[in-house]
Length: 230
Image (cartoon, rainbow, N blue to C red; front, side):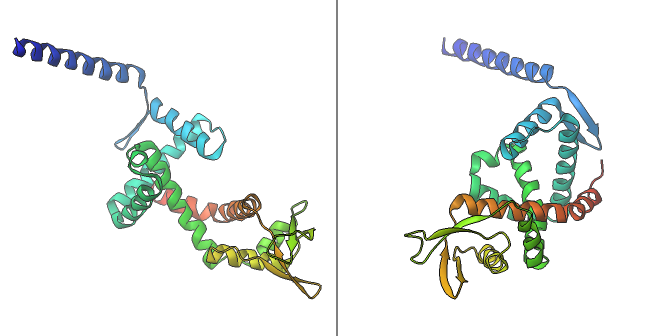
């Protein structure tokens, strides 16, 4: 009797498995197949959703497919020629996001690509970024009004526009490089604390990152396309 029940359960399992694979095959359309790289419409839609979730922007099908080809080829290159570097990135992803995210192949590869891209940004920031570049960048803002204080921001004295203040921009870059939040400045022979909250700090940080992205875009494109076989 037990053998009959086990046989029936096994047949049910096979039926469910068949339905699953049949359904996946039916609704999965291959939209790219070249040099052992296969991309389906499901891959494309997954990437578009990941892109939307991370950048809060929609990406069209052509751009998404182009990104997927580049991502796959770049990762394939590192798997073949610099596995150690890829392992370092994977360790960072595991530490930051956990095993569940790491096992999501689409999201993991998106994060891998993003971190490789970040290397170009970090290199430019550490070795090429000049203070006058950020002075020009902030100078294009309508304003950059921040409160100042003489008692560690317990009491705000006033708010001033610092978008053209070279000393503040130097302090900001130093804080970004040392991962600190020490904003002190001398104004009219008096020492003040500049009260930079999280929102303003992230705004300025993102502004600088976006600028560096534009400055390194061509170099990164050349690097990626050099590794592209498809």
